[in-house]
Length: 416
Image 1 (cartoon, one colour):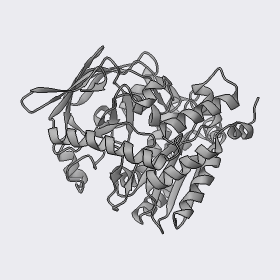
Image 2: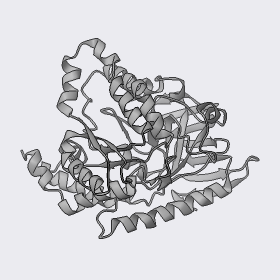
Image 3: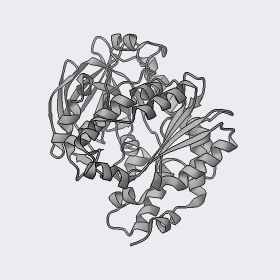
Image 4: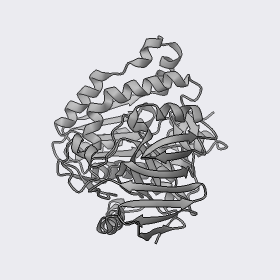
């Protein structure tokens, strides 16, 4: 078996350095004197080191990394007392919230093994997730409320690469996943910063068109789907680069191909079937089918992972309602790669999607709304935010005005 060290050596160091530079300059637009809180799996150390270097070159105050480790996580599930799964590191998340309140930027490196907990007790996984979500809320609110500039990027860890390319030797799988990440993140080009400026401009044209239309609802139709998603009152479409409340323009997700907004939590009707599997906490949930009434999921099934899906839906009242609707063309680079990444950061950019749970308060024309004002306009509140894909080359989408008059938005998965 190839060692992890040699597998990492298979990654193009020039492109890896470009990814770190893009994360700092495009993803965060990190400002001189600004602190950075960075979370990552320990297996992504090679990228974290490069990010820290570029952050300090940009004038960062302090870069504070917080690492996770697969073996440490499994040790808890296999040996910790039962009561452990109803607890979370509240002190840590309170500290992160305090850092964000002090204008620290946040960067997350994704690369965890998507199926790490597949063999563990799903009840314990659910309890641990709930405890963590509750403890994390003070910090998460600073992120979903766009109080600060934040960004997510990915690193091709061996465990993740083995899942995406199961028939390849470890070093080859890592190299292939690295190439896919670099291409989707636009760092396979000589000048990725300029490439991101051009891409952001294209996404801005889409959001401007949708905001000009101010649709009352969207209707999705295709195989297994006839879903009308009402849009929140005073909603705003976002996509690509966004200005945070601290005045810094950032790209929260790298890669990104979506434009998105907030649905009305009480105005979703009809049925919808997923078009791609959802990888969630070690479980692959496939062929999801749900029915909405009055904005709430009243029936749900899945060909695989149904028990986990139902536990997710029972997280809290808002877990059965939508917090996001996003449009992605079927011709997006990630879709055309033909890969299932088992990672929402990538898979959500392969298809139009919806998200269960918490909405983004920035998806309103007035971005300074209180939580009560967000709720009064139809924004959803929940401990979770889970995206799953409903778009494909067979899905048509119409924008509806208040009288129900329809205008084509997408036809067979492409912008109309």
